[in-house]
Image 1 (cartoon, helix red, strand yellow):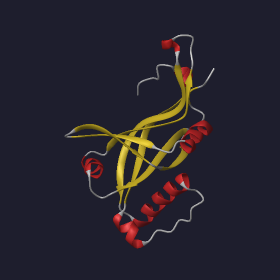
Image 2: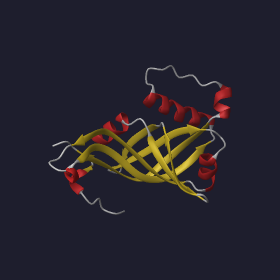
Image 3: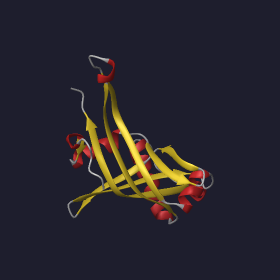
Image 4: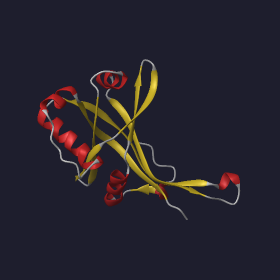
Length: 165
């Protein structure tokens, strides 16, 4: 993978990566089909683990069983992901010296439609844990049957932070 241009902004600390995952509300998923490249913002759940000294990221999201997103993921599961938070304008002395403070995660992975009912419950529970941790989680069989759940096995990702001076 390509080295980050401004390495001083790269985030490698697992705790900060976890903070970014917690603070962000949306992951944007980049896909490609016959019509072109498109991006879909979705709410998500996640698991961040460490194995063999390397951070492993799994993202979970849900959606309808039909439509462009579902069709594309079935045909071409390779995706790009992006999320960002802590947005703040950094003012400058002149127009082009303005900048932006943020934290972000970007990466690539493979999206897999989850068909196993127990894994689907796990994925949806992770989504609820992240988006509404105080909500009671109880999935009816009818809702599970009509909801597509996906897992993105992120093969590569980087964290980045631009702090306010």
